[in-house]
Image (cartoon, rainbow, N blue to C red; front, side, top):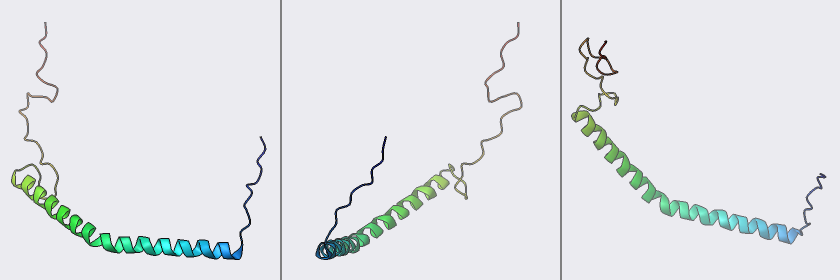
Length: 91
């Protein structure tokens, strides 16, 4: 298998300048879009943060999360109870 170099066509200075101008216009257009959309994105993110904060507070009020946001430890089991269920009967 041979690897031939990729042929790059030569362009004129005018073509290069036109391409750079198009790139500059595209960047400016994307910046305009970002400036128009950013307030809506920030407002949505703020509402999402508020809603998530309310959910966390409700979970804490219900006892499903502690003050650190972690699930509380389960209540201790009686000494005879194991996490594997009741003991099997011996014969």
